Structure formats: structure tokens, C-alpha cells
Amino acid sequence: MPLLGALKIMPSLFGRPPSQASIAPCVKLVAASLLLAAVGGCGNGLARVSGQVTLDGQPLRADSDTRITVQFQPASGTGPSGVGLVDQNGSYSLSTGSQNGLPPGDYVVACSASQLVKVAGSNVAQGARRITDPKYDNPASSGLKFTVQSGKNEFNIPLQSSPKTASKPST
Image (cartoon, rainbow, N blue to C red):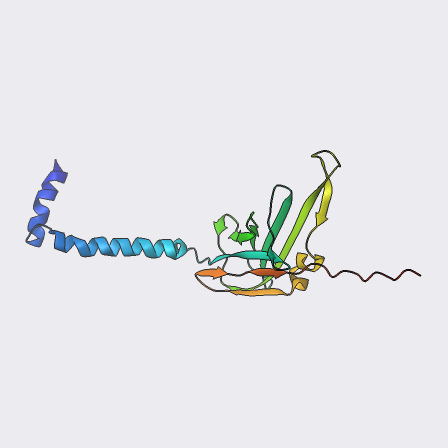
């Protein structure tokens, strides 16, 4: 058995058998390397981006009838976009394709929310109504801009309701 023979002569190559004191630094080095790989996103170069969406100061919450989407598009116009869905707590986390995160850089942001409108007395959807101001649907008109840096980024997105049109006084 060549493997057993190699194991028997290994200590003699270094002059002494390995001790706990000589193994401990190696274990620490391996543990630190694994921790850095986990924190750094395993080297994919993507930064983690998350946050909360609010409407008029209150969390905008998704449910079975409400869908809220956040999209970060590169301000330069080139590169991948990041997209995320808002959850029942109003929180989002972005992904680029099948990977979590977004390349660092400057982004313009769109956020849209709509709610299913159901036929009276049934669960059949007949359409959807917009919850957010239409200006937020387009990153060019939303006024939302963020700079994503390496590592973890948290960007809260404060939306305001559409301005009410002034009603004309009756004559």
C-alpha cells in the first residue's frame, strides 16, 4: 500500500511528526480564507444591494395581490441591470441574472408597484391599478440615483404618492 508507506515517511521528511502547535496556524489560515471568500461573495465582483421601499413614509408591502419591483440600471447606459422584488416587509434585495448582487458603479433606479383589481365577488383578476406615481416607473424620470460600492450596500427608496389634481369648485 503506497499511501500508507508515504504517510509513514512524511514525519521523517520534516524531522518530526506534526504537533497540535504546528497544525493550529494552518487551521486558522484555512478558516480565515473561507471567511473571506464567504464575505467577499466568492470573487464574483458583485456588491450586495438591499433596502426598504416606502410610500409616504410607510413600508410598501407586497402580498398575493400586490407586486413591487425595484430595478437599478447603470447610469452609463451599458452593463447589467439589477432587479429585485419587494417582500411583505417592504424589503428588497437585487440580483443580476442568476447571481445575487450588482457590479459597483453609478445607477439610476426605477420602482413600480401595482395591485390586482378583481371582479366584484370573485377572485378573478380583471386588471391592475398602479399604486406608485408613474414617474417612478422610468429611471430617467424617477429622480432616484445611487452609487453602489464593493461589499454590502443598503439603499432605502422613499416614494411619494402621485400629486392629487386640484378639483374645480362647482358653480
